[in-house]
Length: 218
Image (cartoon, rainbow, N blue to C red; front, side, top):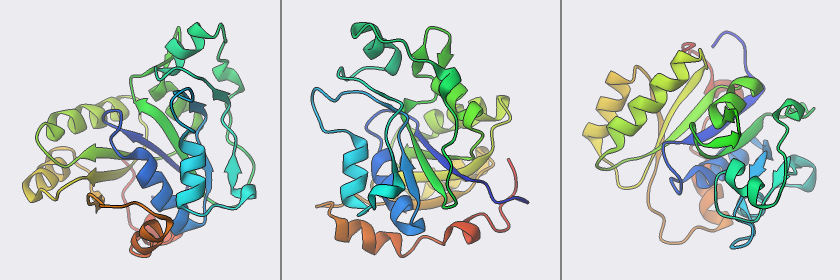
């Protein structure tokens, strides 16, 4: 990429795919500012902001509060309906700051956010290259290639794909080949995810500027 972007948008091919783990790794590696604009499911968990803050040992001034925090473990649109809350995507803009941002989406690209917008519209509005998190195992090629195609139809830049789970060399090869992208790194199944686990893995990630060196715009 000829110009270093302000950060990355971490999305996935499915829910519970490992977006938050990848976001924690990137936040730690880059001393980045973390932001999850839309958080749902707070009735059942403390939320991804607190998880990333703990795992990546993020300073308070490197965390941006969600634009919308909702209780039900549903899409932002469905959860907001239950709470009679109106999500105003027009208020969504990148926060100020000099450090790189790691922005985490909710669910996948086609998750509804408002009656007339989806998560991919949020990605396009924020104008950040996408880190797409995908499973490493069976079924991942179809889901991943469809997500990459959807991004390209909107002319959204793609930083690359992160595979989560047991290594699968052929799936990684075929996603890179047919998706015309690169596998940025692979996250194994950790037996126990702790701040030390994140810190150790983050050392293998290039710093932010080098991460985009010599990477073609997609």
